[in-house]
Length: 130
Image (cartoon, rainbow, N blue to C red):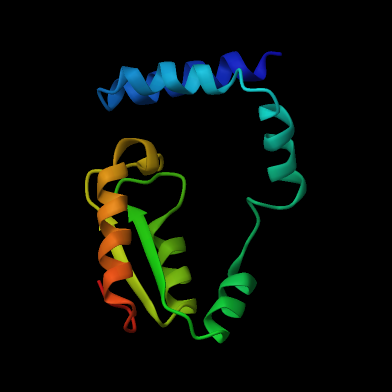
C-alpha cells in the first residue's frame, strides 16, 4: 500500500521538527500492527472526523464535569473549534499545553497525566475554569 509509507514520511518530517525522531520510528512500527488499516477505515466510516457538537451538547445535559486538554500549537484542531467545544460544555476544566502540537498524547504524556490527576483529585469542574 502507498498509504502507510506516505504516512510514515509525513510523520518523520513532523517529528524531526519537534526533535523527536524516536516518535517517527515508533509510529512506523505501529503502522505494521494487524488491523490498523481497518481501524483507520472504521474511523472514517463512523464519522470520527465529523462535527460532534451534538454529542458535546448531550454530554453537557448530563451535568458531569469534563476535562478538556488542548495543544497550543495544534494545526489540526483550531483554537476556534476548541472554544466551540468549551462553550458547549459549561462544566469543564481546561488545560492548554503550551509547547504541544496535535500529537500531544505522544509528546507530552506527562503533562496530560498531570492534568488528569489534578482534575480527578478536584472531582469537579467549574464553568470555563482554566
